[in-house]
Image (cartoon, rainbow, N blue to C red; front, top):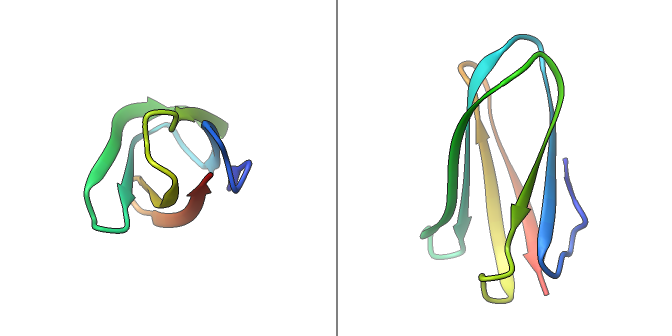
Length: 79
């Protein structure tokens, strides 16, 4: 889940893990260009990542969350 959506500056990515695992968060624009990338180890249970989009232009972005066994993509609109 990501909120608020649409956003003006900061978006919160919320996700639940069943075990401690490496996580890759990649945000791309509609052209497929990477505007944000972070690799981290997240813990079991609920996790949140605050992502600053203030330097990005207004438009549509895709947040991709990758773990060992899951890939999910969410669309977010920046005003």
